Image (cartoon, rainbow, N blue to C red; front, side, top):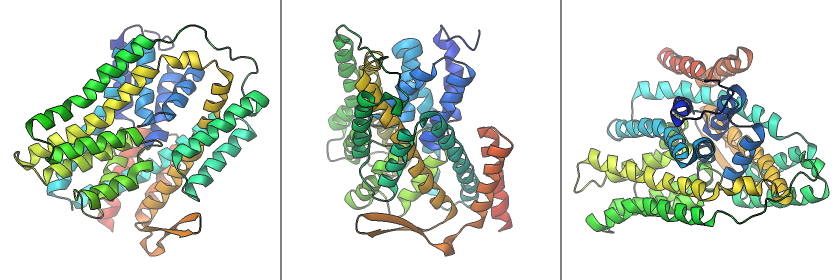
Length: 437
């Protein structure tokens, strides 16, 4: 089969979807860049314009945008079966790894080799995220107006800690206004956007909402019927179902709220364990929101009745993953048919272009946050009026992480190594420097 022609059969796409799922390290920036390289640059299965339309659409939805983008691309190529396959293959590798690591963590949290291995992986991920940020910036920020939106979004998040939905809304409004007055500010072609006439696919939308709403609710109904609403599994299912609806901007946007509720509200985790779970999710393939699986596993593991701790943890992790990602499929299958219709509306095209530029600033904020927490073991947050700043504890500077991160940057930018090779070498380096230290 010619790689430059979109595959006619779903079976032809499955190996590529599986490869993306296995290599989807580096958070949303790295994952989106990986999909772009595999599906747009190397195979030309999706056009640059369609890829950006899909990315813009997914950025407006609650939930992990990279996983939803993979689902949308699968749907675009092969209908709902392709969307389900692409979305599931994007989730499953990371979910299995996080489950295994959560089970290890629950019984032996202080494993020296485990921490050493992850030291190198974190350093490699930092280089991958930096590369993805630069690559996406070059493609998305073609004009001074877009660059200004990206810088404003970064400052709003990093310095002022403004809510992510407010930043998206503001960028969308500015983009829509610019599209009508000065389309060149957004690199839009004037007059290219004629709305597509005709009624929307209302029957298909309603059917998708009903089917996936039922799939979403099914395990919760089973828990209520068999264990009751006082059981920890009910609390897990309801809490993470609510979280799935408000997770705009990725896992970082709700991490503080999730940690507070898991530690203080429900007592599922001890202080500091949320950071360990985030470390697991950051260094495994798949969306960062898989950190919820770590929380669900420990919550059920520590209140297992009437199951054994391991079985309870497995059910808790599975339930958490189910209610976290079922809504993602609902959003895509219900609303994806509108992308082609709405992509030709001038104001909406401008709004989505503005949102895309702002998301570059969001990724830059995540990159800065991640870099601080890789290089320094302790980072404190301080405020002076509306301003927020991160202050690293210089005594906690980790020279091993700095050396490994510098090595990963050289391998990525100077030698152009693949993601897998950089991760493998840095993981081995983490083990070696830890033994030497």
